[in-house]
Amino acid sequence: MREDDRRYAELLDAIPEAVIVHDGRTGVVRLANRAACTMFGVSSGAEVGRSGARFSAEDEGFTADRMGAALREAREHGHARLEWRSRRPDGSKFWSEVRLNAAELAGEPIIVAMVRNSTSSSAPSRRAPRASPATRCCSTTR
Image (cartoon, one colour):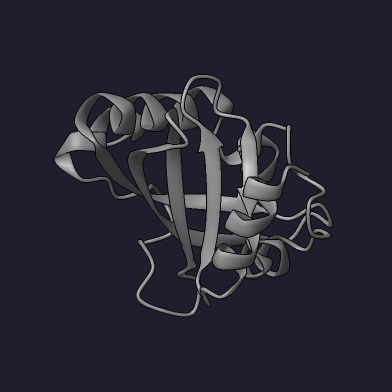
């Protein structure tokens, strides 16, 4: 890990909410903080260089294509918000609120994802995700 990346990772680990930094061009995970690793049940650094799509409940329609559309929305408009059905490697699933923000890190485009487990809160009606008008393209219903 480069020195800059180590410093960014240390900074992110100080944040109690789950934060995942995606490459702004490819969408692959560049960094994930300790809270994100705990939320998704993976070891620190295990997901760097991989697609975050494997943490989606694809069998329920939360596909890599839909996540890609949300990442594009964030790139084009600076931000996006969506309710998402997430999946851990052990197969357990939970509702999450995902806020995507476009930014730059060391001159490179990134998408910062703030993820909150919303299963225990007033999550969507469990039949379809809610989406803001800006991310409605990612939703199967209106």
